[in-house]
Image 1: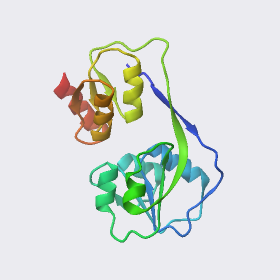
Image 2: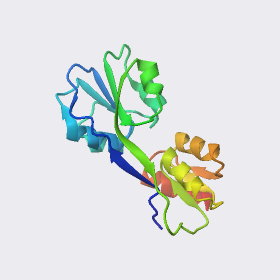
Image 3: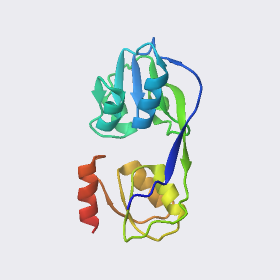
Length: 181
């Protein structure tokens, strides 16, 4: 059963000039899609947190081996130069702090509360926001998490995590569901 628990709302801040940036960092397909719509100019290089984010942007120069902000920090050459981190309002600030990056918020995440909550023995959450929204349903059901940040968010709001996907891919999530089952 598919039950959307979050929705994305673009933040209309006008065009975003990418000229002059040595690196553009993208940590979600939503950010990549929204920035593509509003971008002016081109950064020298683009880094993405994972394959899905890279595909949403198009041509990228670097995809983190580990799909986390920590993985991006580790993968980027030093000095990184002038860096722009484009993401959701309220995104973790690790990239900004570690790389002295500029930050632009492109969208906000809104938690949804379905009229008819899902039923089942196991949930799957694919973002920290989705984990928080799932917790608000008070179902008492364990989850499979897409990765370490989502696992941490789920545990922080009291959701038992039955398994964590080895990578943020459909195949890895299906495998983790099998492990949890």
